[in-house]
Length: 179
Image (cartoon, rainbow, N blue to C red; front, side):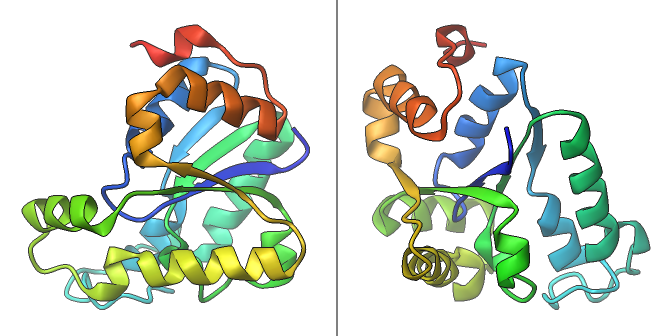
């Protein structure tokens, strides 16, 4: 695969289940929110959430981005991440390195679930605004990304995953739908 395959999500969108399916395939290095560590824990951190903890230089954006690109030179890479984690560094050159796909879930389902896991989340951390902003930016650039609706994925996983695979140009592996 020429570009890094990215699934941009908001929290509690069932994106981690989709990520597990991609990991199960076995043909991609699958990474869970690599830019989240930069956003929360690095010297470059944007979020004040972990400001009371020492910064971790190994999570700085440059280190994370170089490692991701080096991994991609060796094998196809799939990442699941949140636009909130990258919006501060997402210039056109950075965005051009990805095949962008999205997963969404209605706020009436995602937000109560998020609250149960993270009762002090902020509206920024809920992720909808940055997801929308990134999507619109990509559409404006002329490349409307694939969008998966979580409800569709949950109701018809094989059909949705098969369509996704066809749209991004990778083989559909039915066995990836079971653990």
